[in-house]
Image (cartoon, rainbow, N blue to C red; front, side, top):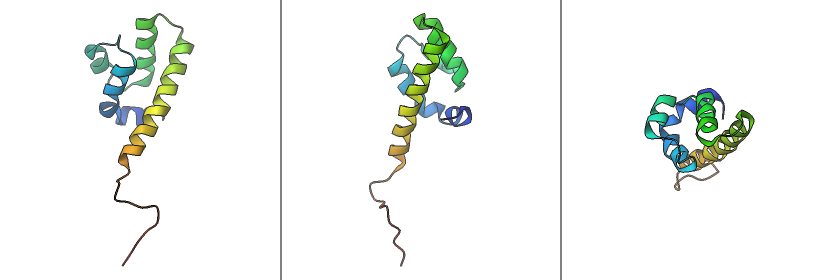
Length: 85
């Protein structure tokens, strides 16, 4: 997920961020406003880890969260084939 996609999906992702990184406060999440690099900085600060480790964790989480969001977009009423009358 690139930075623009990350920002665009931020409202949907905030709950998942809070669940994954419980040390981040609601104020942190509001302040971040979907900026991935700022999220990495906050993770680094709150958990006392290196920037590289925080980036790696954020990237892994973002891939999983993106997959989850994509899966929820699919309606149970759609099929892989197209049916036209």
